[in-house]
Each structure stands twice: as structure tokens, then as C-alpha cells.
Length: 134
Image (cartoon, rainbow, N blue to C red; front, side, top):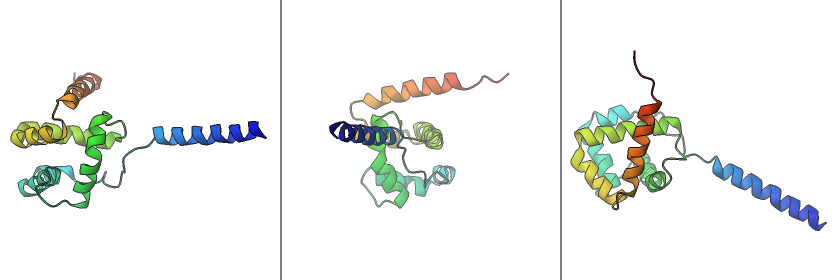
């Protein structure tokens, strides 16, 4: 009987850790039009203010604000491919077009620069993984 109880505990633990390892962030916003936000200064500013605790947040903004620290900490390991692509697009856009806001967001979410190193590594890996155009 003790062996059966141990077996049940082991199976339950395995199931729990397997499902936790495969956990991803919600995909309910994967159809969200990121280009619409990036191309509308008023909307983009609203999202930035949300992330900086300087304004109200939409549902999408609250979700982003909730998962952003974990995504940075885990190198976006729970992100779907769509989320990774969109994150890269937003980061590049902010660096190029809204560098002051990007610096403010970085100061809040990555004050030690710890995650910036991971971002640079991620960028290099993505660049090397993309096929070269002939």
C-alpha cells in the first residue's frame, strides 16, 4: 500500500511539473494589432504611461504589465512565437523612434541592465537564425 501511495505521489508530481514546464502566457491577445498601436502616437503613449504607472491601463496593458517582469526574468521562455516576434518588433520600434521612453521603461523594468544582456544575446541568436537573402 505504501508503494502505491508513493507511486501516486510521483505520478501527480510528474504531471504537475510537466504541465508547469509547458506553461505559456495567454494567447488571447495574439491577434492584437501591434502595428496599429505603434503607428498611433496617442495610443502608444497611453500604453507607455500604463507600463510606467503614469496612466490608466487597458486590459491588454494590464496583462502586459503583469507578465513583463516574468518575461524579462525568464528570457520570454513562456512566450509563444507570435509573442516573441511582436516583442522584438516593439523593442526595435521603441529604440529607434521613442528612445527616451525606451530608456524610462528600461529604468523601471531593468534598472541593473541584467535583462538587456539577455536581449542583446536574443537579438544575435535571432539574427543568426534568419536565412540570408540571396
